[in-house]
Length: 258
Ligand code: 13P
Image 1: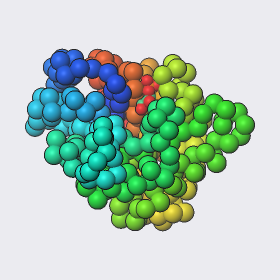
Image 2: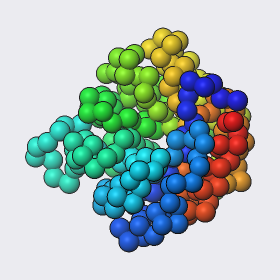
Image 3: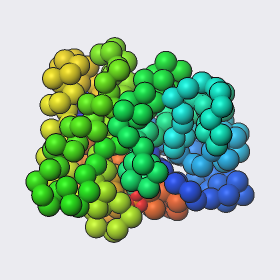
Image 4: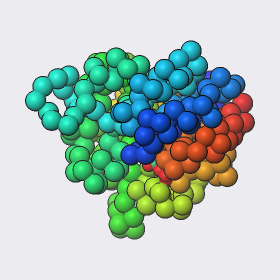
């Protein structure tokens, strides 16, 4: 049974998938008026589908998140999206520092830290992603990597803000590979993350921060992750593109947490 203080999350990261038409078809198949129980359901589509989904899921408990944003509110930043634009569309969450942003687009932890801070100032809740590569894991550098990404990511936050933070532990080697971490491996790193958060923000704030696991989560393995009180939910890529699979993930999360 999860601590009542932390509402469990089932979040879908659609990455660069689904046109507006395809997103609308998903919303029809996943109407959002089903009973999610205690689970907070968040979908993070491409920017272009946000308006259609905000309309489709109006008056439902499904929440929307973006997959990235800039740390400034406006200006000469061609191709970027401002937090103001996301809030206006009804986004409540924003994924920041996803490993694909870090490793394909070269985002650095310092820049991600600025984004995390700006998100809070604009009433967006960041889902800050951290995770080690296979090389880092095999050379015994998992904790060192996670610590660097985590502490620079939350560097500019006060304890009061940190309470609303969501962290997603996503080992890079488990993303899109069909080879999820074991719940024990995930738990070890998640416990380490909470300990680091406690050192930085104190016990009270750190106990309120939700920490998710991500990387090849499926309807078949989700229960084993979320069944542990320290794992507050999942950030799901591939399986979140299918309304039936994602629905099952929500149901399994609800089952594990109640
Ligand atoms: P997969 O679930 O496709 O492995 O992706 C995980 C992920 O990167 C979610 O942000």
